[in-house]
Image 1: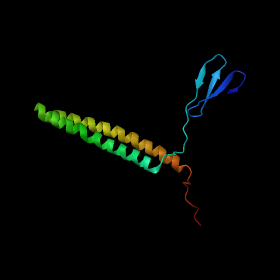
Image 2: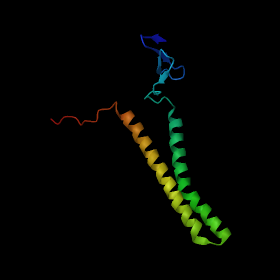
Image 3: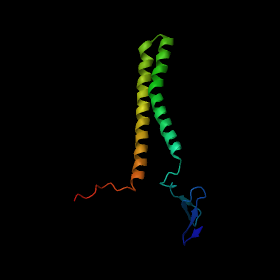
Image 4: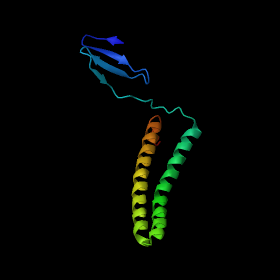
Length: 122
C-alpha cells in the first residue's frame, strides 16, 4: 500500500491493478487491465475460434429447423419456419459481427509489433 497525502493506493491481489482509496474511506477502483499478450496454447485459441464458428452456424440453422418441426406438428407450415429463420439469421448475424470485431481487435493487438509500412523503394 502506497500512501500519499490525501489518498492511498491499494494493489488488487487478483490482477495487480491499482485502486485509489481516499482518506475518508471511499475506494475508487480503476479498470482491471489484462495483459495484451495472450499466453494460452495455440490449440486452446483454435478450439475457442472453432467453437464460436460452430455456435454461429447452429444459431443460423436451429431456429429454422425448430420452427419447421413445430409447424408440422401444429399444421401451420410457413409461419413458425419463417419466424425461426428470421430469428436465427438475426442472432447469427449479431454473433458473427461480435466475433469479427473480437478477431479484429486481437489481430490489431498482435500486429502492433510489426511494421505496417512498406519498405522504401530504391
